[in-house]
Image (cartoon, rainbow, N blue to C red; front, side, top):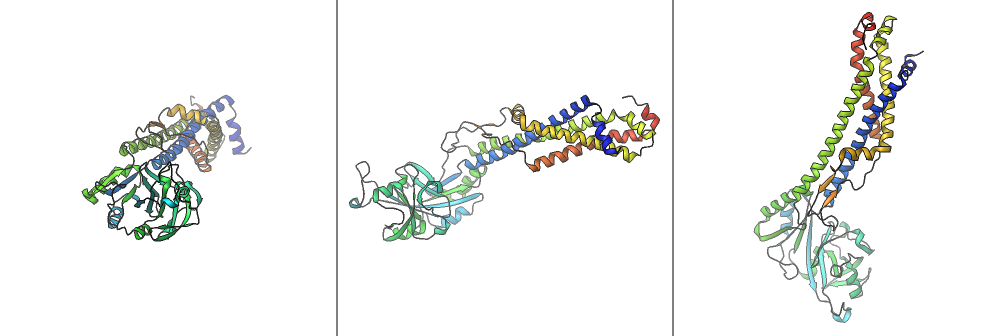
Length: 417
């Protein structure tokens, strides 16, 4: 009989003991896998949460009101703003409002509303400002035609809102005049607000030329991430001075929010590391106990002439068999009871107080980071865990095996289990 087949048979010689060992190893592996998956989910969710929080800061001439003032900032301020560290994007806004020709428009609610013309950089996030507040327009806002993109920088093209279209009888494919400049309408948008949907959006240099405007009315500056927002705000105030009003769009304590998210991610990572250390300690301890009780058997094998290398190979094979079976049980436990195991260990650790933060238009409050739990076992994680189990099994067996084979056969045979 080969040493491999003999080793596998020895594993099942004491079925009750083997079952207990496999269950202990499987449970420790299941806890490690569950916590690792949860940690990955928390990292993804905290990253997404940080990205969803608005980190936009507005810059306007000091004391100006975009809707009642024609104050502008020199174009050179754009370069000054871009020189500040941790800036994600800088969107310019040139704004013009004028009453339409009543003979060619339809009144809304018994009165003729003004048309708003916005000049922006098509290569950046499109921000608009209306009396209803700041609004971003994305590709999901387009109801017909196409979105303005970086390809349209400096091109005489424009987007129109649905209210503008209805009021002025203009559709995609038509041309309209911005003062004396003719532009083609390539898309129509809607954000569900009549005032916001009464606008025409074009490249800012086109609007500047059409209305002979020098400079820009407003800048929308986006910080790289929520954690750097307060630093960006202070750096902008230092760089630009008192001639500008620098105001975050969202009224919130970004430093506390980022600290809370970082704390949640750190606690989750710590939980994953603790589960790894615990699993390793359990596996090594179990393997030591299992191997130590075989010292008398090692003495018998030495007495009948087995070489040390052959004895080690046999016991390593047994430990790897136990580790593999424990791994299979651990994977099964993770798939069946993983979420319950995770909740048992985490409790409310994945809940964050984010009062004052508006997420997608909803007021802040207590936010559960794990809004969805993707309990997927990736091939990489499975391979890593299997290799880890095998290595730990060998490490756990190594010390008692070495101690046993150093004994003389007679001493090993007298060993008291």
